[in-house]
Length: 421
Image 1 (spheres, helix red, strand yellow):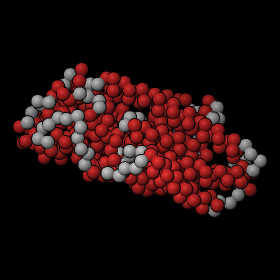
Image 2 (spheres, helix red, strand yellow):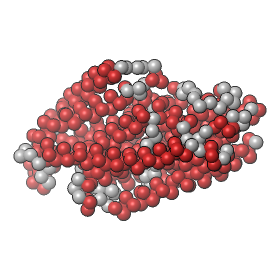
Image 3 (cartoon, helix red, strand yellow):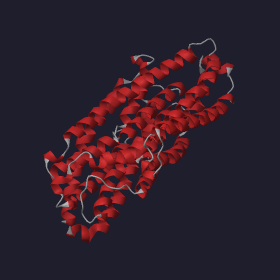
Image 4 (tube, helix red, strand yellow):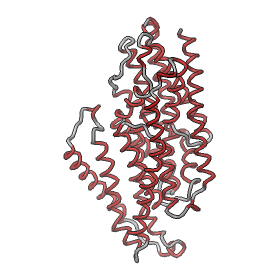
């Protein structure tokens, strides 16, 4: 308690700095993953992707990021064993932020699409094992999270696979693919607006004291979907058939229709990512602020200040603007060849999976979901369309993330304990 009374302001200040560092890493790595499919399909440029991310990543983090944050903050370890020594938890949360942020910086600089969820979960486990004891880790909770890392890419891949098949059946395999694309395109855009709105309104705005009943949420989402559909229709109507391009590639004109449609999925993917992965950076930050503000009380629940959500959104935006282009290239061009139709299917499937997961409070990995979705659209063309060597390298980076983050966190924990102890 004396340590908190003496250095409380220092702890909060370090938490803000380390939290920004961590959310910067999220933007440079995971947010870049989220936008990589749009860039890889050449639907948007890197500069346009950064602008889209700046708006919608921040909006997702600020409006719908609070529910997942509580899972990261208090669901992985049991702090009851250190109720009399709350400074241990402070050191641990700070060490976790610094360890995860450092690993993300290394990975992003090399263009490795690692999982920020792996990073922060591994870091928290590493501190808990050395700072409290092995039994303080709620391994059943960790197991459910690990399970989600397996289920989420499968869900994203299956959904993307069937979305791609629907596009093939309703558009590409028809007598006039271009006219079919103009007819069905607005319907797919409606799905984007409807889905993102619905899952956001379902208990997504509780921390803003905005609550809707199930029927109200459904009605508002339909309205939003129709508005988005109308905007999409205007974009689609401006696209003209290009006979010369169609002679080179039969579906060139169809792809021209899906290119503006991918702007909508890019926005939804950015919102979905911000709503889910902001937790990885601000969860430990929220824990530090809560403990210091209460004078050292370690509780299982704590209020989440709005400024923390805003801080997390800001850090993500800065990360994708400064270093995100390297990971964008990896995820968008090296797994499989992406076109606007394939990228649209992958992004819509990934956004749906991410936001649905964020509403349940389960911190899934956006990286896993996106890789699964991109593989799903690749499999729609056959296994040969996927570069399995690249996928293998990505999976390897996932496997080493958790132990590296845990080891770094243990080292930083001991360093902080030495400095303040």
